[in-house]
Length: 146
Image (cartoon, rainbow, N blue to C red):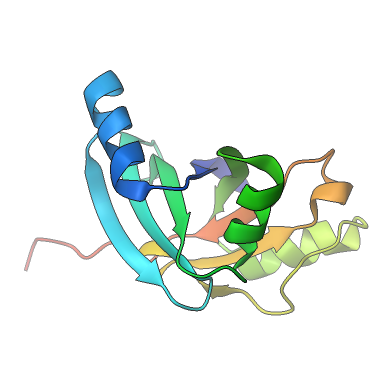
């Protein structure tokens, strides 16, 4: 079952400049940043709010680190803007299998590592009315209680 909008992915040419826009315009702060070598991106997750299932909703800003990355190719074709929408689920494997069974192409045979230690896969945009769709199972939250 899908439980929330986990994040909206936004492709950009200059991550620092784009982060500053969202900070100055909307007051959003960077919650997490990392470089994902496998996907060829530098990213910043801007936390928008917490959700009732213990997760959160974010804007994910993506800057390519190499010209052959999917995001770089997308930027070259489309320019900056919304790249994908991601839905949260407790079990990305089961959700992907269920959706695959409904005739939607799942882009990864097995989920991969995503932001903040999450597990992710993508659904083909041609099967989702033109929207690249990501499924996300967040990494377990470390309790601050001992």
